[in-house]
Image (cartoon, rainbow, N blue to C red; front, side, top):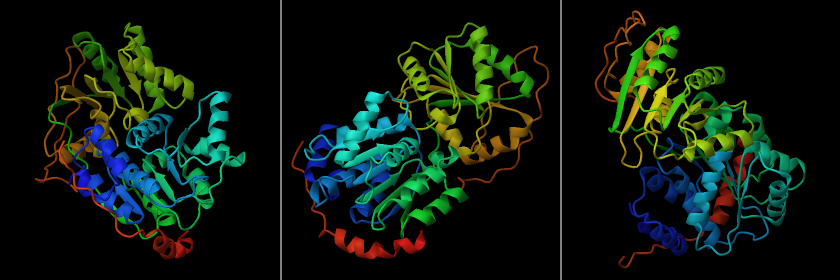
Length: 422
């Protein structure tokens, strides 16, 4: 479907035209009409599917076209990290280029007092769209800077990450201050039990949109070493002695291991840096700036940067340990082979992770080639393959549509029963 076939208004379509956006992605094609019809939406889609536009475009179109208060916060978008909040804010500026009367503010921690004062003024004046991390928004709420009583749209982006980071109670505290007749949109890359529980609490008769996790790009050359934990650092040394030491991300699921890997690379005189939850927001910003700008060649990180960070020139991804599931594997190695580039993905698989990696191979519907251990490291564990089933698991004139009759008031009536589900 082309964007001009939707009921997005002319100002939004003009911005998309300038940005050379013509075709909807599958998540956009399914979500935009439902949001324009005032339905709550539960979207399951991984990063890179276009989900930010899937909710921003219809919300901005409605704010520009319909009768929403000019002195109120009309939309709150929750983000798990400052980095994602900044990216949403950048998308907001592009999509809203021709929207003269729509204001926005990004609200997140790690700033000085001047930034906090700017956020406070924007919130008290009633910015139309507020893009916020949970902790920072709660801080403003407790200081009396935020009036949630007239919010019409509430969006949770990457909800699974927010829960993984311990934000469940913060989210529910924010939800309690929202009006019952709001429209709620929630996106998650996965649907574990805790996400389903959250959805039942905050969504009202949602339309469910599920986009299957896509396979990794064909240009990614995938391989794996089957090894013992004691062999992992020697393997890493061998990789860095034989490969170009630039534009590499090394992922590990544990912050202590990230620190250990970073120390070892520094002993090897590798120009590296590390990203994990023990860093302050200012330190994280500095690390990302140095890596993105090329001042650092190698980034060692937990999954905090596996999603939502746009870096197009990553040459290699190394999974120091096996991700928890196929979705996480795709997110991690998807940092490479972007923007029509080739890429390499190497995974180190210890005996405890063999079964998990076989499940990832089952999802990929192929066996990832195993690389022999370097000379002198001894024998590798036996990789016992299990039989796999075939198949995946689990410039001219544009037609401008007009949305149907404004259903905002009907939506308010329909959602009066929402409170009984909270």
